[in-house]
Structures are given as C-alpha cells and as structure tokens.
Amino acid sequence: MTRNACQTSCVALNRRLQPAAAGGIIASRCTCFGWGVAPPFAGAGRRPGPDATCLGQKGGNEPVASAYTIRRALRSDVDVLVAFTLQEAYEAEGTNKDEAAVRRGVEGAFADPPLAAYWVAEAAEKGVVASTSVVTEWSDFNGGHYWWVQSLFIVPEHRGGGLVELLIGHLARARSAAGALDLRLYAHSSNERALRAYRRCGFTIAPYVIMRLPPGQR
Image 1 (tube, rainbow, N blue to C red):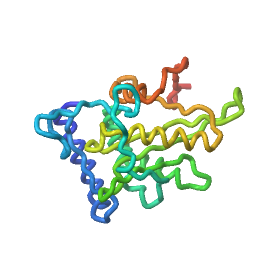
Image 2 (image 1 turned 135 degrees about the horizontal axis):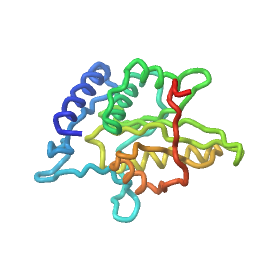
Image 3 (image 1 turned 60 degrees about the horizontal axis):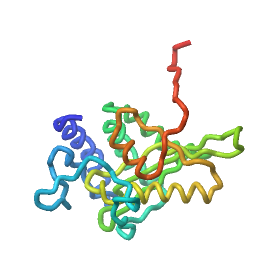
Image 4 (image 1 turned 135 degrees about the vertical axis):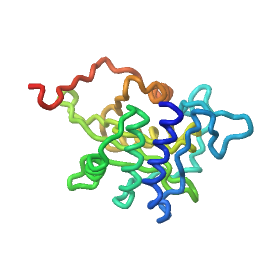
C-alpha cells in the first residue's frame, strides 16, 4: 500500500468511526505511521516498524495487559466492527469491500444461532481499539470443533505494544475452555506483516492448501 493510498483509506475509516466516537464508543484514530508519520506515543526520532510483534516470547517485551480490557462484543459494537473489518480487508488485500455485505457478515455474529463470535479490546479512556472474531468448523476426523480466527484488527496507534498477544492468548484460552481443537487461521499470502506476527505468536504453517471454486465455475 502506498502512503497516499493509506492516507485515503484512513480518511475513510476515520469518517466511519466519527459517529461512534461522538457517542463515546471509540476515540482512537487511524494514522499512517508505516511511512514515517509517527503515532502519538512515538518518541523523537522513533519510527515504529510495520510488524505487530507478539510479545512475551524471546526478544519481546512484557505485554501491558493492565492497559486493555478484552470483552465479548455487543450488538452496540456493530458499527465499529464494520469499520474495522472494512479497513482490515483493505490493509490485508488492498480491496474495498461492499459495506452492506460486511455489515451483514458482522451482524451474523448476533443472529440466533450466532454464526461467529467477536471480542473487542478497550483501552482506558480510549474506548474500543481492537477486535477479533472466530468461526467454528466441525471435524469428523477428530470429533470436535476447530476455531478459525476470522478477523483481527488493531487501530494503528495501538500496534506493536503487545495487543496481538493479548488477543490471541484470550482466544486460545476461550478455545480451551470450550473444549475445541486447534486454533487456526489463514492470511493472505502477500500479507507478510500478519504472517510474521502470527508466527511470533506460535502459529505454524499447516500441511494444507486452501482451494476455492468461485460461483458460476460449474
């Protein structure tokens, strides 16, 4: 993504978040620090790298768990989740998804029965700054559910501070409490930033290839 593209995308995200921010749900804003535009916490001369490091492992810092509260998402979070999902798709794939389709997808988590489960991370006095979601897949081979990480988005100014680890750790514990099998995910093959972050969190490459048959092919 070019700097201009990031700035254009961030403007769109900030516009989507503006009504929610006015309601006190979220105060964080999108910034393009990957091109030298430093986030508010950066010190003089500091340029944060593009990676979201999974802290708590060799070479990492201690995660600041006390800075965030992770909770199950509520229906009142839908507008923020839609904005996060649209931005995540743009950053991961460089595509602008249909907002109506994304909203339908997010709202599926609040249907009966729910089609997915979302969690959000809140920062003190900042509101919702991150979200993640899972969907399940039944395994006849192993007689249990796999949990698939469907989405994980962190607003740029809260990246690189241990929030990836906190979110993945929370999902792993919830997975274990539910008696599920593996915690799995897939990422776009060109999204090296995400792949590096997930490897640092302990994910390994599985011996499978994802294949698809688009509508209308047969």
